[in-house]
Image (cartoon, rainbow, N blue to C red; front, side, top):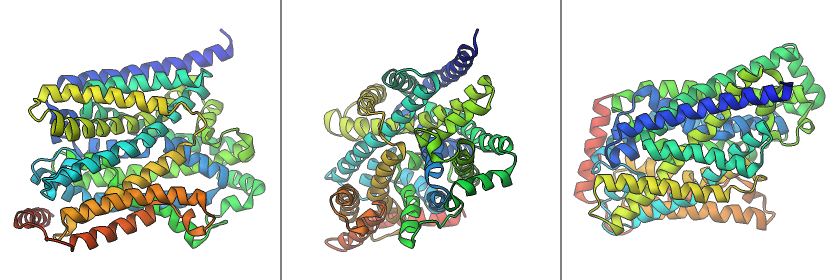
Amino acid sequence: MNGDVEINFALLATFVVYLIMMILVGMLAYRVTKNLSDYILGGRRLGAGTAALSAGASDMSGWLLLGLPGAVFAAGMNQIWIAVGLTIGAYLNWQFIAERLRRYTQAASDSITIPAYFENRFRDDSNMLRVVAALVILTFFTFYTSAGLVAAGTLFEGTFGIDYTLALAVGAAVILVYTLLGGFLAVSWTDFIQGILMFVALILVPIITIMNLGGWSEATNQVGELDPGALDALHDMTLFGIISLMAWGLGYFGQPHILARFMAIRSPRDVPMARFIGISWMVLALFGAIFTGFVGMAYFGGPDGLDNPETVFIVLIQSLFNPWVAGCLLAAVLAAIMSTIDSQLLVSSSALSEDFYKRFLRPEAGDQEMVWIGRATVLGIGVIATVLAMNPDAAVLDLVAYAWAGFGAAFGPVVILSVFWRGMTRNGALAGMITGAITVLLWDQLSTWTEVGLFDMYEILPGFILGTIAIVVFSRIGGGPTPEMETEFDKVASDTEHHR
């Protein structure tokens, strides 16, 4: 057996074993999924560790191992401001939103989806909040899921040299199988395993690369010789640019797949431990991704050393590790991709099944019917996302950035104020959601149509600000919150403070 065949066999064997493991987890979760609450939210029984790592894994996606290392590899350390903003945003989300949202979604008629929570929290009999929220989810998850599938296709194509379209189909098929079978529990359990894999790979790859280069000093010297500016986090940066990159952190407050972990955690008392585990995992993983891109510059002789900067993590693994070890580490890239796509498919499925099908088509539908409708919609959405991902030239980070901004601006202000402001109303929530979403859509277009520097700002920031203003203004127009809403708010606030 020649060297190339042996390498491909080792990589393929480890990938196949990994994929089979994920499907087996899906089959196990299938056995304990009895009703729609189990399928959509795991029956609210996630432990702290599972909630933390599944939130982190579903959050970070392929951009952590492809997009972020690629950005640092291409531009240098001035890209770290994304990581700084994300870390701050994630911490604030766990610290201030997680426990309150867990309590409030249960108090508000045991809401199992974000659209249902908005409707129940604000006593919206018109269904407008639920419908608009579901439309936002379906619109922006189209881009987000496509980003993940592009990353999956890139991974398979770069690893095995197989056709991108075939690679895309294989990756999508496996994700669909275990998500279809086990729903939220399968997604969370696989995300827990995938989070550990991602963590090990992101710590190991930069360390081995640094050792191969002759140590940290030698690595930084080589990068400095290639491009002195790559060593400086402030190189070519303005205050405007830094704020724009750090604004990524605002996105955490509105990501449905992350908020779902808060809603599903076993008890509000588990939140502090989950926060510690989740933030520790995140900080170390982000450091690993940044240093992978940085030392990759030294190893490959600068950005021109690779055709696609976003493959730096993949190529480093293939260059430095035994094929069997490389297969395990590359499975971490697949894990990062799968852990986000499965969560997105499930949230999108819940938007169609719970928020459209049951609400408007079959209000009398029973639990078993709804579980199967959920599975059918996962399949349908997965097929559509796969078709949309057929363009292999789409940049993973760009697609993720657009979807992240959409959710952050549309849902972030609504979620924050819904758990902290007693005077918020249904009109305010609806206005904030629509304003945030439209701002992101228009801002992105204005940045291409005009040369005004303001529109180069990451669209999440203006969307978040304008959405917040809209909530405050429209909540003060018309009638205020009902006595029932105020009583429920006071009870949730009291329970949260009492148990701290």
